[in-house]
Every structure is written in structure tokens, then in C-alpha cells.
Image 1 (cartoon, helix red, strand yellow):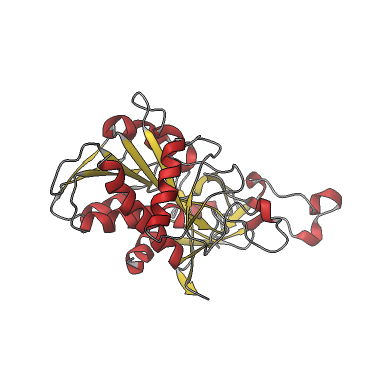
Image 2: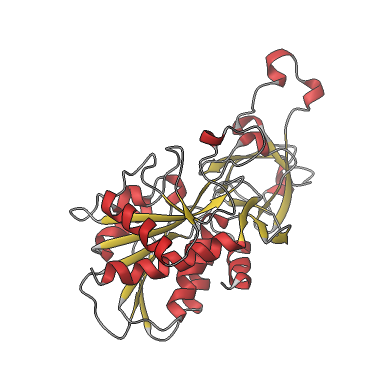
Amino acid sequence: MNFELLKTLCELNGTSGDEKQVRDFIISHLPEDCEYTIDPIGNLIVNKKGENTPENKVALFAHMDEVGFIVTYIHENGFVNVANVGGIDNSALFGKKITVNGNVGVVGGKAVHQCTGDEAKKIPDIADVYVDFGFENKEIAEKHLSLGDYGYFKSDFIEFGNDMIKSKALDDRLGCAIMLELLHEKSKIDYTCVFTVQEEVGTRGAIASAYTAKPDYAIVIETTTASDIPDTPENKKVCKVGNGAVVSFMDRGTIYNKDLYKKAREVADKNGIPNQTKTVVAGGNDAAAIHKAAGGIKTIAVSLPCRYIHSASSVGSKKDMESVKSLCEVLLEEFANG
């Protein structure tokens, strides 16, 4: 897998409703044997021409957006309030760096030694924290940012430990990187790649694009929560980093096709691809919208186990990333040929 490509994609900024930078990069790196369209909501739908047109139409889906922030208020003293775009753990925000229009700020709030009683134990609401950009007053702040501007975690892409990667936006630039890589490889079959928007705020892009692509089979490439950390009971760890691609049988948005789930696990085992499933019904992804669109679409999700998801420092294994790519590649031909 091309980890330099993944690094570049993760370092781009593109939260829900502001995916243009990511979309433009992908378009500029598409191979010549692909045709693409952009629908009114912003989804990028790419058709890959292979050697043959298969019996079944298969589409891969991955979302371009990441969790982020949006500016909601500028105080007279130059401090800025933001709202979350997507699900972010507010307990992990204090001290984090955020960028808005290239301006770097630090998330702050009431100091813990100034809190009393239950206040000290309470996770702060996003409305109670602020971003300190170092502006002296509102007039100066408004020269650099406005209400409705988007904000992003400022976080480096780092390889560390035993083949591990730490970065913002692994969810779901990994899926985008895998699809872009596959599009550059010679294919025996025609297929479609859908780079969706606004997954983090309710799978909105997938709702529209599933009707446009209208495949017989859909493979959603994602990341999913891994809670394999100290003091978490075995049955609550969901999945484990290092144990391979995650094939889900159910999450909060989808009960996956039972036959497809079994086939995916069997195909992975047959091809020596490390794989696992979830031990907790948790999370959700674009499959929630896709499987019930266009009269019903047979859908499977293949995910990267990821620690600290939806934070400035998501962590995943390079070996697991390779497993996700390998399994998606094999399933693509498996589903296409019935």
C-alpha cells in the first residue's frame, strides 16, 4: 500500500460540507481510463473501465469528509466559539491545536483548579470551550475568520512503534487512498468508486450517490473503533489493532447481508488475509444509507480497526491497512462474477 498517498490525503482538510480540497486532489490523480461525475451534493462518482463488463455491478464507497469544527461566535476579546461537525469526544479537546483558514489556535476552557464540585468531573460541552487564536480583539479576529468558517485538528502524520500510524482523518482517508490505488491498477472488470460527502453528519452523501451508482453489490471501506486498551474487558474491545480487516455483521445503522458476511470471512481466510469481526454492536457508516437505497443493495463493510477514532490522533496498523485493501480487492472480483 502507498503510505505516502495516505499521508497526503490525511493532511488535507475536508470536514462535512467542505470536502472540495480532498475531492480536487483525487480528481487530479485519477488515471486516464476513468470517467467521473460530481453530483449536486458533492459526491465524486468514478467509473473504472476494465477488460470486461461483469455479470454484477459492484461499487466501492469511502467518504471524503472528516470530523471537524465550524466557527459560531467571535468574542470582543478575540476568543472564538466553535461547534463540532461530526462526533468528537469533547473530553479530549483541551490543549489541542485547531486551524481555521490557516490560523492556528488552541482549545481552552475553565481551568480544572477553578472548577468546584461536580463541575470538575463533568465533561465540558463544546459550547463551554473556546479557541484561543492569540487575537487581541474581535476586530482583528474578523480579519482572519468569519462565522461559518471550518476548523480542523492540526496533527502530524507519524509512523511509530511496530508499523503503526498516528494521524487525524484516518477515518476515512484510508478508504479514499485504497480506492485511488485500486483505480490505478489494471482491472479485469468494470466497477465504480464512490467518494462520498457528509458521512460524519448522517451519511447524507451516500443517500444520494447510492441511487446514482445503483450497484448490485456495495463494498464500504471504513475505519471502526478499536478499544483494545488496558482495563477494557475482552468482550468490550470491539476489535483489535493488528488482527486484520474488520468485517461487520451488524452495527447501529446496518444489519449486513448474512450471506455476504459469511462469504467475506471465507474469502479472506481462503486468501490468507487476516480478518476479524466486532464483538460489540457499535458505530455506523455509509452502509446505513446504501443498503436500503434504490430498491435495496447488497452491502458489506470492510474496516480498519482504529484506536482513538474521531480525534486528533487516530491510530492504526499498517499491516491492517494492507489487509483491508487486499480483502476489498478480492471481494470486488468475487461479487462482480457472482
